[in-house]
Length: 64
Image (cartoon, rainbow, N blue to C red):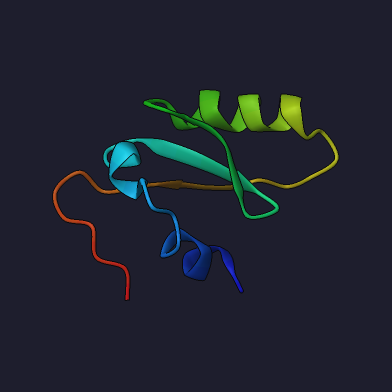
């Protein structure tokens, strides 16, 4: 399962609409309004991992 597949399984994904999220090992480890801050938070929690960072669009969320 890749990260986009994982996103489809998150039951409260709507809580992150319009926000930046950081995923490490299929877990949301940080979220917020600023991508750089979210990245830094994720790296501080998991310094040896490379987080997957993305912004969930606020207008329409459609993952296929």
